[in-house]
Every structure is written in C-alpha cells, then in structure tokens.
Image (cartoon, rainbow, N blue to C red):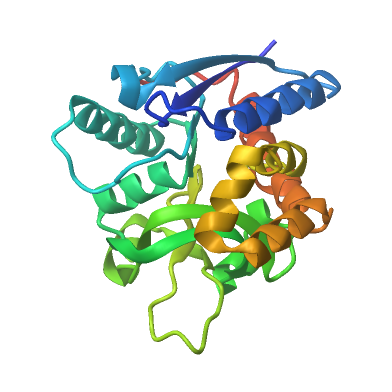
Length: 283
C-alpha cells in the first residue's frame, strides 16, 4: 500500500484557534474518502509547532499544510523563521529534481510569509483589520484552476488579517512560473490596491490569503459564544455580526468553499503520489 505522510505546520504560536481543528477535520475526511477508493493509500499525520517550539519537519513528508496564525508576518529575528524558510526552499528544490513531488498548502499567515520570502508581492500592514466573510474574485488563471473548480466567481471566504499582499511582482511570478488565482473583493469606491488572495506558486505548491479551512458549523458555534459575539459587535458593529451569521448559515458560501479547496488539494496530491509510489527517488 502506498504511504502518504502529511505534516501540519501549526503557525498559531500556542494561541487557541479554530483553524487547526478545521484542518485536522478535513484531513480526517480525506482519510475516510481515501479508504473507500479502489487503491487506498495509508495516510498518517504529524503536527509541528513551528513558531511556539521551532519544531520544523524534515523532508520525509509528502504533503505539508501550513496554517494561518496571529501576529506580524513582517521580518523578524526569531529562530523559527529562517528554519521555516529553509524548509520552503528545500521543498521547491526537491520538486525540481524528483518525480515524486512534495505538495504544499499555505494559509493566510504562511501565505504572507512565503510571498515575502520569494519577493512575489508587497507585504504591508492594512489601515484597518479585514475581518468577516467576503467575496473573492477569480483571475483569468483562477477560472481554469482545478483547485477552484466548483466555486462561483466570486465565491465567499473567511478573511481575518491585519496585513496584506498587494502589487504582485510580475517579473518574479514569471521567473517561478507562479500564477495569481484570486483577488480581493472589487471596491471601485476605494482608491486602494486589491489584495492578492491566492497564488499557485508551482504545480504542487499553492496558498491563499483567506481561510479555506473554515467550516460553517464550527465557526457558527465560535461566533455565537458571548465573548466572541460581544467582541465582534463592539469592534465591527451589529450589522457585520448579523451578516456573518447569515453567511455561515448559507450552504452556498463558507460551506461550499470549505468543501472544495483543501479537499481538492488533498485529493489531487494523494492521487499524484499514488502514481509515483513505486518510482525510485533521488535525494
């Protein structure tokens, strides 16, 4: 049986969050779906506390999912940062020299870090926090991206960030063969650049600046706690809170996004890894 090892890179710096629960739930669903296939693979999962413990995986894994997280993605002198970027560089290098590829999904904070590291766009602090459920628009490349197949244009996603990637570097994107797949909601009345919301860095490495792992049931429970409800109403207003709850109840919004992007990424990766399972690999 083909063995597929998944590394979940926890970037939450020991802060409690819903994201890790959502990621692990999607992986368990993938395991269940895989067991029902004609040629199932053996899926195993390990979690690494990147920022809290500088616990960085090696190259023995096949799939890497790097979470979002709190705090600044701007340059720092923390030890974990260079080790994390070393891993990212090693993953790109591996895929250039091996038939059995490494697959990587980068979420929000991780996406911002890698865009900065690869100089693919401008990373800056927003004038105000982007928080809520917003429309995300596909680019021409995003229209044909398999990972977005089944989503409308625009589709809806959970957004929660104080920083943003804008001004994609066309020259660097071309050098890497990377493609911008999605952009922030269209706001003709706001004279600001639209944020880049998803990039296909390579055929095997993709990332989003939003949270595709967010599920409607868990998010609804989370937002309906008194503490979170009061926080949202105090900081963003009752109308924003009511809109978010309504979107979470709509099966064509967050539930659809959650069911398409990361499940599609995992399905595509597992299938590709099953094809190359018996081929010899270089190091």
